[in-house]
Amino acid sequence: MAVLTVNGNVLIPVERLAREVWPDEPPASASNLIRQYVFRLRRSLPPSVGRAIVTGPGGYKLRLARGDVDSHLFDANVVRGRAAFAAGRLDEAVRALSEALAAWRGDPLADVDPSPSILAETRRLGERRLLAIEMRADAYLRLGWYDEAVEELAALVTLHPERERLRDMQMRALCQVGRRADALAVYRDLRQTLADGVGIEPGPELQRLHRQVLDGDPALSEPPVRRSAVAGWSGSAYR
Image (cartoon, rainbow, N blue to C red; front, side):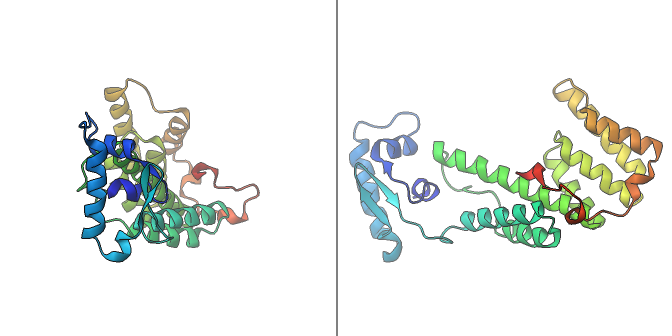
């Protein structure tokens, strides 16, 4: 059922369903077993859902309407938030991204045995969620909501300590709330993390920001500029 759901409205051949259910080695009777499983699924589910499992040439698909699956609502809100961000409508972007993130309840598909489709969807959703949180934190910064940005970025950096864009935004947010020493500590921690993990230095953009923080550059504590008023703004970092 999970495989049919994450591949909604797409006909999945019986042979592929067998590889999803038995990734290591499908039994000789896999095709017959898949048909039996689908039969049991239809009987065990509410009639409206059971009827949505459709038999097609050589396989099965689950008919899904817009909004039937919460991940679809999440994706739609992320798309809406990204469009608003790119247009400089940052308040609207925050609302859309917050609606998207509110759909999450722990890890996706956590109670489903891993299979190629399940693993791919789990990775996709995880990457989309990270993008949404990162974009919302960026919007907080551009709106001047620095306390919200500091809180959001602290949690993100803990989960993704090597992601330089997060460290960049975290340092800028900390400078805006007067925590210059903490911003420098963020850079030191990243440098050590990268040295221990992959043996490289932070990238040139982050090195420039580090020098700005060391020099006490007043630009790092200036009020934000609403990007909707800046010529050429496209929000391209999130395309």
